[in-house]
Length: 127
Image 1 (tube, helix red, strand yellow):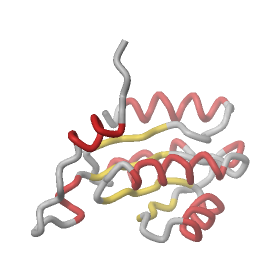
Image 2: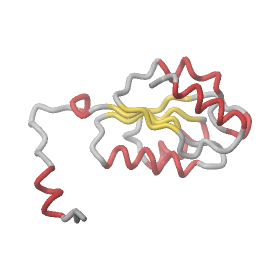
Image 3: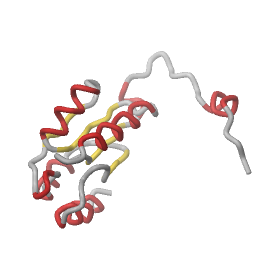
């Protein structure tokens, strides 16, 4: 068994170049949250920011975007129309596709409706 120690972690972390900018460190598109599960989107976005992503964009419904923007102003926002259950409607797939990202984070807090299953199927098409 391998134990991850702080020494091991610090050996793996490289200093960031002086001429680096946020575009140097990749981008994350998070499709997350619903009216009932706002915190899931906030935690997912915060995790992406803390792990060093240069740009993090959240595609979600307005109540989620407002909560995340208040907590994490560095997060970019992609407003989406709400569907059944207060989550992201599958009709937003073209808007979401237009977002440029090197990583797709999909699912936290989308809810448990028939539409969330449709969103998951549509989101797989983005990958």
